[in-house]
Length: 157
Ligand code: FES
Image: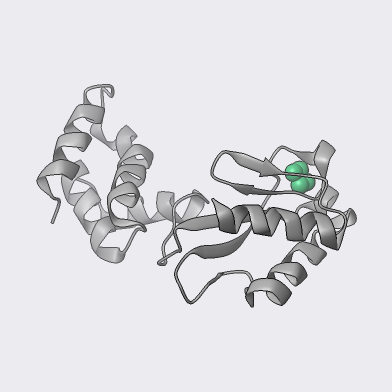
């Protein structure tokens, strides 16, 4: 069930849309912001609010890679594994996370601080290989030292 704060935010956002269903992505972001991730219950709550089928909301949630369908840590690090980054050695980024934090793709540290996910092109190809935390890009991660420095920075944030 939506909380009062969630409903208020959804109502406010809905004012910008002629059709409520066009609000699906924003609704997912709002609930994720409040709940940390999008559970099946969240999908149902949104569908009820938008008066549509839960499968429609679920298909948007599954397609949109910044919507998390599993619990995640406070910091979700997106590593680009598309071709430019792969050629430049993106596989080493996961290896460094594995060595330093015991973390592979789709996993979260035991203290729920960091989740590592793979992603398609982050639009930072001229600094391949790269990764992203929120709005912060980490590029030119070609050496162990550069990846380790980025991991240290992420942990310090
Ligand atoms: S291929 Fe990695 S940012 Fe574009």
